[in-house]
Length: 246
Length: 238
Image (cartoon, rainbow over all chains, first blue to last red; front, side):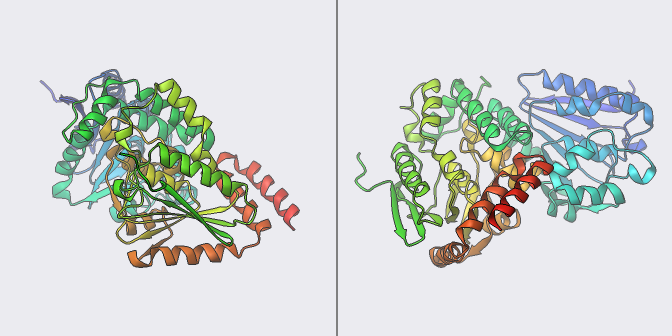
């Protein structure tokens, strides 16, 4: 069996999507783009997946796209439509389409040696997988323009300082830290995780008053779930809750 | 057991109003009595033209640990809860106060307590303050606007990380993220917060009020619309 350039693995409530063409710098070609889209649609449709981890084999997370054909597949849209929290685990080069892929995740962890670059403009292209829209929402407008116009490399410590990643960890600890975070999230209320993601993500598109309405409606909707009652009971009885995702 | 002390203490010192959360035995967990006390104090402040600045403190070891889960069992149906939430809109009242608001926080600043701070205009934190939004552990989401205020303060990335993971941050990190503007020694918290309040109270009302309104609503408008409103208000003030 030949190894596929993209792998999707399930372990209990955690689904892991892995870029596995490390020899080719995990570049996103048309095949990989297609497979990212299928994997994203699979996990999005799986009610018992609570958390999604996106990572890569090899020295570099992803050095970018392979050619123009890959952009015909809306892999980024499919990833962004995943309702569960997505953790990106980043090492080495996180460049161009690779950086755009990372931006779609909700929580980005990176190794101390990771470096980031939005080099599309420097090579005569426009970003097409979300960078012009997501980057300003993550780091602010002026920083986003700096990174997109210059195409310069951003090292891990700057990345965490400007909010491009949530956390930097030693290279040797990256996988372990990502696993611990995924397990930690998987212990929380799975519907609550989806709703937090929805309220935070959708809320930024709304006025504050509209966003607060959305938050409150989701808050009240959660009161009708079994998990909500279990969460409060477990807290008062000082024991671990058992959530069932309903 | 009935609580004899009021859940919220309200005092006025000239132009500065102090609202103090006062359920120290319960780490100032937010319950119905506190909601009613806050609503009363905040609506009185809203209608009091003498008050220029409001500070919020918590008595005891913690600023506020969020909703009092002991009262969650007796909550009305979700539809009733929703109706009550908008009938006595404590948080909307706090957010839209014409006065400047400062939270002076220490110890546990958790859930609704953390969110209350983010509805204020400025934050001063004691060095021992720890901030977290642990709702997802309880199969809940933040319900005091935290999913909306946090991303507007820190950007999307940090907001998602904090709300999804529930991980706590300390006072220096909160300052880095722009969530509080000063970190002070715990013993100096009230003094330093009051000093800031007095300084802000010196700003003339005809500047203080429109400035707050402009900045608070800035992210609700496309830039061009916000600039037009700014210009209009500046002309009116000048």
